[in-house]
Length: 258
Ligand code: NAD
Ligand code: 0WE
View 1: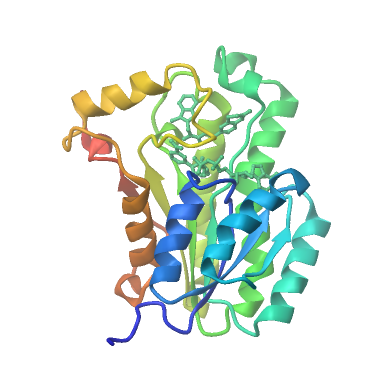
View 2 (view 1 turned 120 degrees about the vertical axis):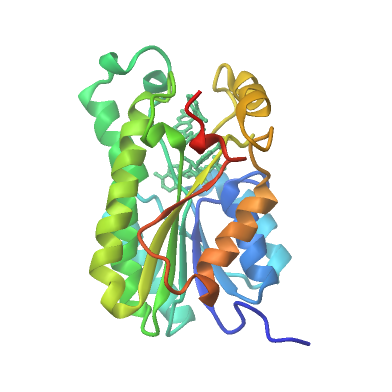
């Protein structure tokens, strides 16, 4: 058998909630390419579900709790990771949250508290996780975060999440600069709308999918498995000279002016 693209690599995956999660699609692609993976789960409520899913990669697939808004949980998570492996190669950040009220109504009404929460969980967490993971990335590495077009253009109701994604994308560039000398790359995938838990309950979500079917060059958004394959590419040596970038996996929607 030909050597596997991620054979011998170890990765940490943040953001699996269920089988529809984008993190799950990328984890499946990484694992199929030979990576060993370690997972977080956000809280006891999600533990059983995530445990059942990751068992697909073997009975003893490690998973540990980590709420990314808590420094102590990030520290204890990576302490457990370092008991499992002496080196890390990959980190996936597929985490976002803003209070529901902030994604309804207008941006003008965003409270200080909603603004803080959205930025803490959706953007600062990339910095905190990267700082905790990189001491283990002793042979270079690839860090990947998920973003959305609302970071650069107004998508009605995406509101403070768009501002937080702009911060996530800028953080990606500054982290890429800091970590380049260590051969650690940091990139974002900007996904078109995908029907996940984080997208469900967003009013007008099916109208958004329809809008992509009408306006994107490829007449559709994207499939989770395609996000997995792009995540695999960015994690692989094929992307060894790519860092600080936002790669659009959105049916081409981002190029359109109208
Ligand atoms: P999802 O609900 O499956 O994943 C979101 C994850 O964030 C969940 O696993 C949840 O547990 C985690 N999370 C939230 N708050 C957390 C906290 N405090 N600590 C730890 N984990 C926390 O939904 P998804 O669509 O797979 O979202 C994953 C990423 O993809 C997000 O960054 C999202 O912004 C991005 N994205 C989604 C879409 C889409 O249309 N679904 C499009 C572009 C980008
Ligand atoms: O990043 C996202 C959604 C992230 C998200 C989702 C929720 C729902 C539940 C963050 N916080 C919360 N808080 C909750 O209480 N996407 C890219 C999907 C998405 O969300 C939208 C979109 C799209 C696309 C919201 C409004 C408009 C478009």
